Amino acid sequence: MKSHKQIKDWGLGLTTPLIIAGPCSAETPEQIEQICKEMKEENMVPQLFRAGIWKPRTRPGSFEGIGEEGLKWMEIVRHNLNIPITVEVGNAAHAELALKHNVDVIWVGARTTVNPFAVQEIAEALRGSDVPVMVKNPMNPDLDLWVGALERMHAVGLDKLAAIHRGFSDAYDKRFRNKPNWSMPIHLKRVWKGMEVINDPSHIAGRRDGILEISQRAMNFGLDGLMIETHHNPDKAWSDAKQQVTPKALKEILTAIDFKEPLEAMAPDEKLQDLRRAVDHLDDQLLDILQERFAVIDQIGAHKREHHLTVFQSDRWKDVMESRTKKGVDKHLSEKFMKELLYCIHEESVKRQEKQLREAEALKK
Ligand code: PEP
Ligand code: MN
Image (cartoon, rainbow, N blue to C red; front, side, top):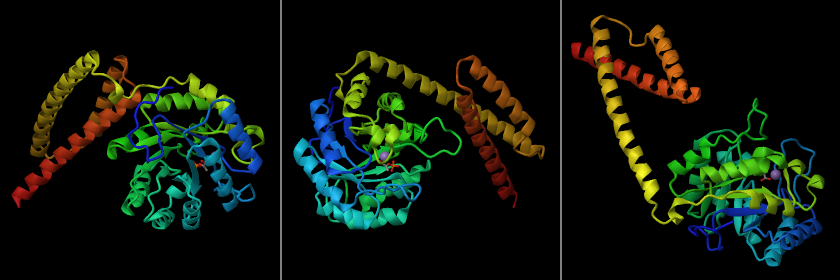
């Protein structure tokens, strides 16, 4: 695996793809020690070591984390592997303890990101520190909630920020433990330029044999790293046993992934530039056609106005939708894409015509 860039190393020597590994939960000093030992033996020391100290469990009665004591074991990991450490915090008290034990990077879990009160409380507890914070996506696919949690951190002066994409709870689609919804992390990168998003294939797949495929997709999409739960004896883990992998398996996964080159790291590429110029040209043509189409839509609007017809005509819409979708599918465009595109164009057309009507009526008054 190549390391490409060193943009936001947070003063910790981190590079992308950022590999974070370690157990779901810190269980005992021996467990932590054994994981470190195997990581060293396999030559598979990650860039950042993770462990959950306080565990937000869905149902009560299961292991809820070892608490503050585990932070001392984490400090030993930092010394032993000579890498920074990260833990999850779920409230202000956790955040204060993490700072007290010099945790290098803090992360906010999915069950906390959903709650702006808790996120604000954590942000206040971290105010004045310079600690890097990674914010997992909320349980539900709500981009604003995710961005909002990052903004709350930013607002108290924390600017070493990253996001973690761990997938979204879905009541019906059980192919994943948490459905990835890939457009969400990509959209986060669009709305917050420069935000690095780490993928967590362990909590998306929920089973160890799904981790490689999710990781590869994350790298194909251009996400910035992977957080993979790693345990020396996964089946005996006190939490998330099905999805953890051994340090040896982690190494196999990372070796199998085809890590892509980020464009910035490449020498100017003539071929790519040519292809992009072709796309620019086609986009210009697409815009010209849309402009022309909306000009005709406006004429239809004027005609409807004259004849006192409603803007929305359901039979016509049904016809347009069905015939165009079929044509698109025949041209190898997906049905979903065709429907979304047609909805979008149709909605804009209806809005334009309704606006025309309103303006004409206002003139009459
Ligand atoms: C975890 O990382 O172990 C964890 C609890 O994750 P999440 O917040 O994504 O459920
Ligand atoms: Mn876990």
